[in-house]
Length: 313
Image (cartoon, rainbow, N blue to C red; front, side, top):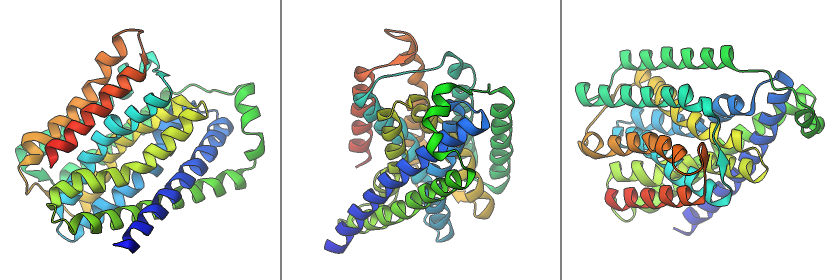
């Protein structure tokens, strides 16, 4: 038990370092390529911070632990908005680009709806569902590239001056992704071991312990980005991670090993929480000062997430 606790703390440390390295390389990359901060958050940072979910879900599916594989994605998407966005908003409010609800939010809702449809009517995610997810993800990335606007600015050039060399950008990108991956491995394995010692069901472990563990990279990257004033990267990272979790994590995992719904609680309860947390962003953005999420919104999200965890147990 003591060794598991030490691994848990080491995992958190690596995740914080990895989040910081990934953020620094991503901002520099955005400036060098003329990409907007929102887009770099939706793509590069999102994909890197979604790698732990992919590794965990794939590993779980291959050893016939579909409860962990599916619960990890559902729980992570709930945690990304309820816990990570909620905590980030408690630290600092943020504005949401108006175009978000015309583009990125639509992709998120459609991705979530597709996953729900396949799970309800096919009792799982089959290989051909995974292929559909990957094709839709490719279209999402293509759409972002075609519609994003160049964002070269003096402020961008100034803040990335230290990292203007491609070798330095690539080095921090690799270090950041590696730190997030290794930190997540340590955190998830130790947390799972601790949870199993208390005889907690596999589906609950996937929805809570594993999901929160694999969401810590998003938490680290988003909080660090928000503190450093990169709120677009912070918000884009969370939304992009949820899209990547469904389309790439479930998609790739299902192509390699179909995911079967063995616990009906996923269909009867958990996927509806996942949809609800995605939908709630729209009314929140329109209530009060439009297109601005504040600390009260963050408190609501955190409380809602705590309710989800309580009901899971």
